[in-house]
Length: 281
Image (tube, rainbow, N blue to C red; front, top):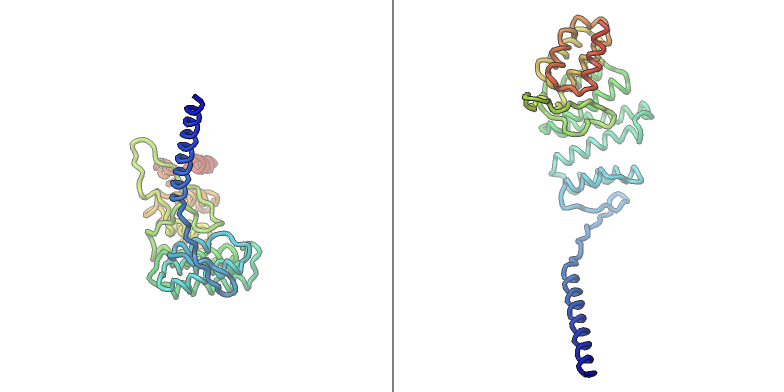
């Protein structure tokens, strides 16, 4: 009897050993070594080299403790992927913006000048790449109009976008960190969601012209183009809201208020602000 129990114990231990050992082997077989990216010493910094230009760009766009290291990460893209023009163009845009420092609100006149020169160089270098050119023109318009308060110098860049890139979509995110737009809600009821509700660089550029232009003829020209080509955009609603704040523009804008609200493309807050402003008149 004792021998029988001893044999049973041995069999249980042996089975446990086989099971555990088998599990260990199976687990080990699933542990594939992770390939490590090669690291390249470039301009005094160790930069990991990614297999694609997009991966390299994403790395450069990530957070860095040192601005010089971040700048080097962008410049490394030109070095390792010179033929990938779109990614190089995006890197050039980021480098141009970095001339404004960590916070553009504290940029100096020299910083503005360097940024302007860099964006103009992007326009010269990346002809044929509209996604790059439209952003470069936008930044130039913004620097002149909002930062330098030189509106006559900045507005032509917005017109350039309107004339040359009328249908390029802005994408999900705002065009630049400091822009906050009121995006439309999805139309309700039988009205289908239309592509017209998507935000184009040109529609926002026309809004900027309405905001910055001092000549009434130019303001109305921009607004008319907004209504004609982008009436389903939030930019048109924001332009109406802006014009309502100026009594000199009331005769121009009042006829469009109900038409725009009835399109049902503005979110609740924007529609209410437009209607509340109109009630005063």
